[in-house]
Every structure is written in structure tokens, then in C-alpha cells.
Length: 573
Image (cartoon, rainbow, N blue to C red; front, side, top):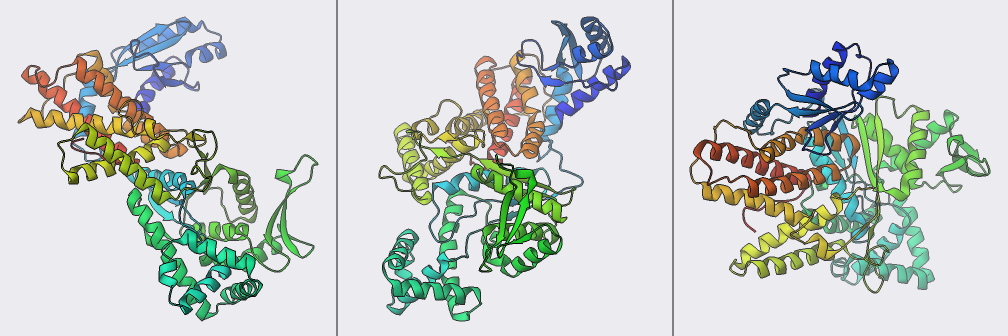
């Protein structure tokens, strides 16, 4: 349910009843729950505009909210704020309704948009490294959340599978095929790339062969394409093994690489030239953008075709954008890409708007993210300065989690330790990222992310297992029981649980997964306080059943919410 919208509607009625229909109500969640659940902050602005005393006007609005079925109390505070406390009986009804719905009362859009999400997008010339982590898990969480809200989501893994470097790699693969070592060499893509580059730099004959392979590859030579496909297939298998370990929704069918757009590049450039948006500049084809002038008042140059006729990733991105709108019918395009590409996407979207390819009714958004840093404040790397393979990082997370689990629960079987270690380890890596504002850099710290205290995945996962332990001890109980909210912490927990849809919509609208992560942390924290202050199993029969209902919705909210972040839950830890 949309709790904020429901409360806002009642406040708008009260404003209208006092002649303030055109004034913003400014309804916010109360910062101090001792004073209420929500706070109206729009009275002072309305009073100034209408030349009225703000406190007197606030009292009139508060009086209009008396006897409201949703709002129990409306109290004026300070110079004109109004604190609202919601009706406990109504909250009970809402909680009960949420428990009857597999979707926890979250409404799906009646007119769902088609969202195309570009995420992960590794370069297939190398194995995935830690630099691909943020795009992969942020994009996956948005995929899950938008799907949950009813969007038709089309994932696009825009892999780098084309360009001059592939001539070098295919030439080297040809040599390895000749001596029967191709399969062995391809087991380590990093080494394969390094060895091929070494040959290219040191052997002029090989370098010339590699350049010839580029030409043959781009001209569609079947023999070279076959070798290229062998390399691409192996690279994608490496990537897919990472996706499966991370439990991402990305599948091989979602791969639409740079090579897919080859036959669309020249028509894209030609159309920009025909429309006068692009011009010939010393043989190269360029779009000059007055919207992005430099300090010397010179327009930014967006190169879309080189003098030799070659294309750039900018050309591919334009063709890709057209395809996602014209063929995939995307209404919301999300590009989950490093913040360092912000200028590129701003220019890209501007050109697409000018060309008429990006209509006003289609949103195109760069979902920028910062860098994962080491404790030294520099981009996270090995001690020797090498880039860390993503697969190695994930395996280390699982190994560390298994050690931690085994130390806390020595009686668990090896199989149980392995399963819990996997869920906790992968969850810890994901949550450490998703709980941070994606536009910020963050420090990767094993100890803090695997801690069972604070805003971490293990803390949230443990909160869920605590809920499950309550029900293991509860035996039989009335799962259809009436909910009675009488205690302050019962009230606060109920209000927070009913904000689930509000938080999901906010997360979907802004593409900030940390809104959902921090909401789940708040739920877990509130439940812990509720658990300590309000006895559940030892309470009288009716109170016991009511509190079990609240506990059940807490568990379901944590489970659904963590799943939307791509994080698993456990029955025991």
C-alpha cells in the first residue's frame, strides 16, 4: 500500500477545507517518533502566502483532521508544524491485508513501462574484475525492484566483443589452435590477453598479422569470425560463472554486444549528417555541441566516425540507443555505468534528442556510480597493484564467511557451513555496496561487511533467522488472528512495515538501492527493539497471536526486500 500517498490525501482534504487547495502540504516522515508518525511542514509557507498567522492556521488544519479514520491525532508544534499519529485500528487492518497478499500489499502498475537496463557490460578480452562489481549488482537490484513493481524489464549486457584488440586475440588464438593449446590457453583469459599483447608488442610479423585479422574480421571473413566466436563464447562462459555465483538475473540471452550493432553504425552516422547534426571535420564525422562548451567557449566535439572510416564506442552507443527504443520499445532506458562516463552520456542523450531518436516520452538515465576503494583510499587492488579478478574476490568472501560461521557454530555440518557461508559471503559483498549511496566512492573492508553488528547483510540475515526461530518455538497459533496495536513499539514497527511500497517506489524512481537497504536496516533494528520490549511467546493468547502477526510481516518484508537486493536469507545461521 502507498501509505504516504494515503496520508497525504487526507492532509490535502484538510488544506482544501481551509481554502488552501493550491498550497503544497509538504508531508514528511517524523524525525522523532515520540511526537508522531508524520509531520506537515507546509503550513508556514501557506500562511505567509495568504497573510495568516501560521500557528492559528495550523490549528485550523489540525481541527479539520480530527475524527479522521486514518489519522488519530493532529497536534500543532512550534511556529506551525503539525505532528500526525496514525490510527492504530486502521494500521491493524492494513497489516492484516498485507499478510493476505503474496506481494505484501504492493500494487503493480496498471500501465507498466518497458524498462531497458544496461548493466555489467564487461570487456570480453579479459576476465571480469572488481571494477565490474558495482554495475552488475546495482543493475541487478534495479532489475528485481522494477520487475516487482510490474515493469517489463529487458536486461541488456552490452559486452565489449569488437574492436582492434580482437584482431590481436584472434590471431593469437589461431596460433594456439595450430599447436593444439587453444582450449588450455583460454582457461585463463588474463594470461591469454597478456601473452597475445606481448607477442603483438615484440613481434612485428605477428602485429601485422593481427592487423590483417582486424580487417578480415570487420569484413565478415567466415574463418576469422569462427575463431572470434570461439573466443567470445569462452569469455562469456567465464562471465556467466561469475553471474551465477553472484545469483544475478543476467542470462546468456541478455547479451547484446557491440558487434550486434555493426550494420547499424554507418546508417546512424549518415542520418546525423543528413539532418545537419553531424558535419565533416577534416575527414572525420563530428557532432559539435554548443550545450557543452569548454572554458574557451568552444563547443564540445563528439566524434562518431574516424578519418579512416572506423567507428567508435560513441557510434555504437547511438545505434544501441535507437535499437532499444525502436525495436525493444523501451520507455525508460537505464545505463548503469561508472560515473566517469557522465559527460559522455549527457552528450549522447543530447544528440539523440536533437536527432528525434529519443522522444520526450522516453526517459534516458545514466545511473552513475563511484569507485570501490581500498583502505588506503585508492581503487581496490592487490598488494602488488594488480586488478583483482571478481571471481577471486567472491570466492574469498565465501571462504571468510565460512570460517566465521564455523567459529560461531562449530556443531554445524560441513554442508551447512558451506551453504551458510555462500549466502552470507555473497550477501555481505552485495550489501556493502548497495547500502551506500551509489554515486559515492566507498571503502571495501572485509571486517565491517562481515560483521553481525551494524548496517550489514549478516545483521539483516540474522534478524530474519531470529524471526524464523520465533515461529519454530511458537508451535500452533492462529495465523488469522486479529492484530491489536497498543504499545509504542508495536505502533512504530507497524507504521514502518507499511512503508514498504513507498520505499520501493522511491527506489525505483531514483534508482538508489540504498533507500531500500537502509529501510530494511530500520525494520531489523525496530524489530530487535520490539522483540526485547514486547514479549511475544510469553504474552497472553490474543496479544501473543497479534505480535506473531507483526513478526510474520517483519520476516516477509525482510525476505522480500533482501531478495530485491539480490541477497539470500537463511532459516538458521
